[in-house]
Length: 250
Image (tube, rainbow, N blue to C red):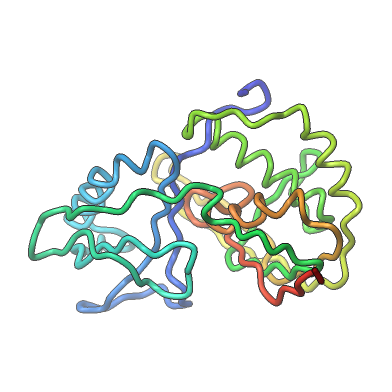
């Protein structure tokens, strides 16, 4: 499985808050999502403890300190707001009972659209033929989805997807057409303490509309909304949502 890759993907995704600001004052609330995948769902207490310790150390410029106020297990598939079961509160210092994690089939509804508009919410870095691309033919996007989901499934969910069908799926993905697109490149960089340098992490954002038979691709598209797509997915890159769906006639 790793003959083409240097490492397995991380079994988690950190989703940044849906806001533009980068500076927080004492007393401000910072809300973000943590998506745990496969076996990582068993390690929620360790993630909470890690964030608790990180709050003591501090983050960002001048090491601003924080404390965890609340952890909510979000209702799935709804993602419009942070609503769900409270599993941890600062005053209690106790992890309450969580509900079982959702299976793939529970996230994907059966009603498949004939046209989809995909909105990329964070910079998305997809490589095709060795280079980052913004020329997003559907088969290029689907290759990235398929690669990420199959690796997550194998390494963290204990299940290997049937790769004998991958070539057929990619060939069918070439039949999906672009109806409209408004993608733009967004440049940003981050400081890497491990490498001691600034790293360029730009990617494309915006919207693109596809049309065609999405029946074989729909489970991957829906799951991708949770696990993201492309490089840097574990710390929030490649987040997208499917909007403005035109449902197929029965």
